[in-house]
Length: 303
Image (cartoon, rainbow, N blue to C red; front, top):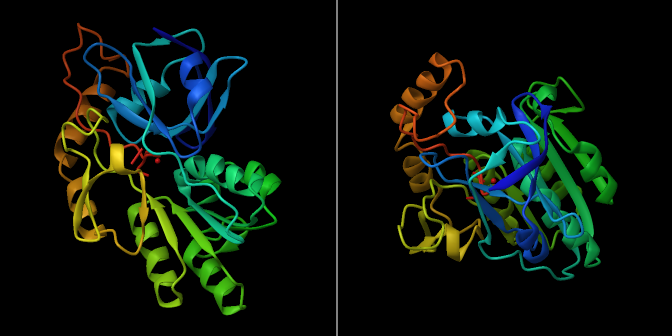
């Protein structure tokens, strides 16, 4: 069992948890994720490791409640336990000094972006950050990203805070201003990552995205997280979660992520009907449905 050391809501329906997992805390690297399971009958949920404290033996995750499984995890408090915490999983981000890096986090995607951006800044890169959300209430980790960035632009779709517009608008403005960009890393909703890739494509700016497909065993055996990249089948859990954004088949990814919408809704309805008491124990009457929390990995993947 893995004790939860801290659990708090940091934005609307967005939760931060610190979990006691000493071996993962010692081994994890930027870009990797873990898989958690609340109870015996619970779904396996991939979530990006946002931070770790090897001395304390803890790892930090940030996730948004988007379905029954993430809702039951969010209902836990410090002192509660998780049955399984497996990791670190996935390939770590390739970190090197390439020059100027633009890191783009959309919504919950800012959580998996933070450790990657931190590592890239530590490697000596000039870090330009774009952090966005639909509304001010959904914006996360602004101060943490500001602290590591050489320059940051914050956007909200509705203009409720900072610059009104999409992250792609801010990116296009950087390009139009003549900013030389050596690498762009975009993590967030699939439509956002696709849009970023289309902005950078004409300028031949290397663009990395972190994918968030449905994932089951996270070891490359089940094939549930398969995606098409450059015309070839890849498994996000072992080949990713990061891929060349210009080669990802985003249309296929969207279709696969929508495969269990009906089951997800039914599972969430049962959870709410039970007053949020269903914790995935052996006595639970509700069989968990797929909960496509980003990997972030989750997706974004494990986002």
